[in-house]
Image (cartoon, rainbow, N blue to C red; front, top):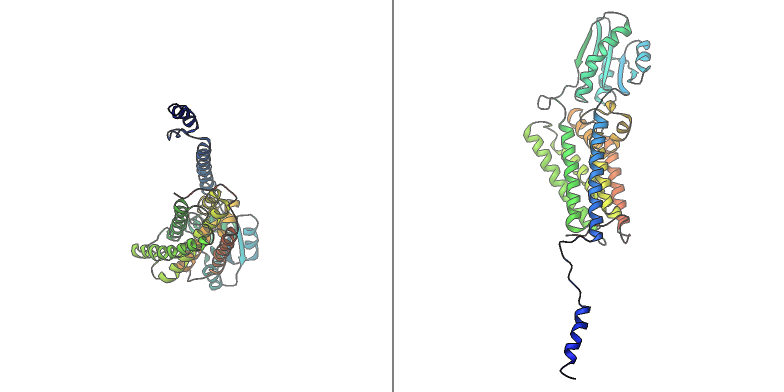
Length: 350
């Protein structure tokens, strides 16, 4: 009947209608993603504390390089343990040259009127302080005399940076800012840039690196430390920043959200305490002592310190290390453009 058919169809239509989801409820995928984020935060926090405390809680000498102008038995005695690596040097001038070239942290010059202990606070204030306290009694015992030991700072720190930490803080600021910028890009545009857009993202990191290099080195110069090396330090800042930003983006593109965890582990959790900034590399435990110079934070700190305090000596190795990181990051970015999806979980752009 015409008047009855519509009323008979209404229950059928109501039964097929979808009930809208209550936005206050938590579905299983969202809950799992939340648990992954919480677990990742806990693991990074534990790793952060473990890395910093493990690296910095008990500094002690390991293989501290020293030049020795003196008798061979003294060289052999210093080399007998694991604390020092002593090298016989022909003259005081040659010993100072080795310090300038970052081959040694100090030198021992045995003469007729006493023993000169030459130190380089610019290489590491902590190392110089400990050497100046610990070595004189060792040297007097080794020579078997009461010969006076004269401590001389041949590479002192500038008055504007009495603790020698400015190179570390400059490198740290560049690394952290670049990592945060890459992570912010992923939050707004997604971890994996579709197609070839990752190259636009890397170009953006290049622009950011130039601004960061100019700005952060400018701030350091305005405050006082590291004056007189503006252009070389800006170039170091650009290289360090674009390397960290590109490597972070490449890791995120290949591994998804796991790439962010790997990046913060490499560049912050492990990189900062192992960089040789708070304590020189020879004062760190074995694991951090080995990896420190080969991570971007360590290479960047070495570059800033060697340019600012040592006339640009010994910059080849840290430069090669940063360029190697950048080359690997670019190769990973190219590979990520051929992948349909990252290996790890992916976050959607907001």
